[in-house]
Image (tube, rainbow, N blue to C red; front, top):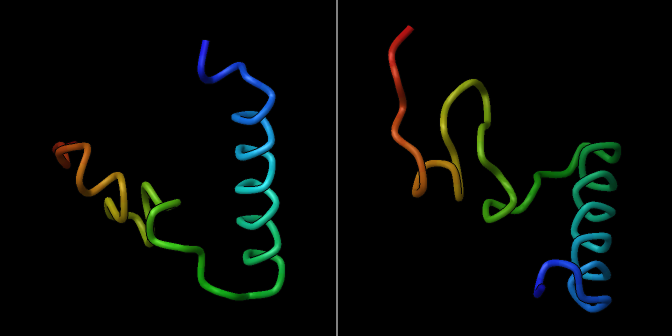
Length: 54
């Protein structure tokens, strides 16, 4: 339920917009938004996942 509330959707939209603006303007994306950076786990991804092997 919480993910479908109007306030949650507004937060998702604002975060997505910020990420796109940073990307298009060549600015760094906030670490808490990152899962992978340069092929390695980063930000939230580094704290939530374990790197596997090929």
